Length: 100
Image (cartoon, rainbow, N blue to C red; front, side, top):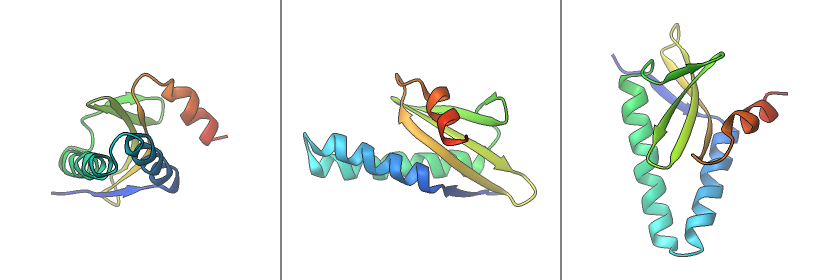
């Protein structure tokens, strides 16, 4: 059974930021990398939505150098991606700021 993976507006903005940062060196690589990252997120969370580590009321998982924070709505079989950030950033503070 596959879950639907939905990227919130904030996660979409994160994706745009990642593209912008990588594009400073290589625009082609930026889009290719982000396409691969999004595909991996959708594939893994769509099949194994509960596989991430639980933190308060969300889950998080590492994808290479990026932390992905998400929530699972089991009743609707949907995964909501809230945050995608470089793993060295303090993602808990970023997430907290978004939820205030």
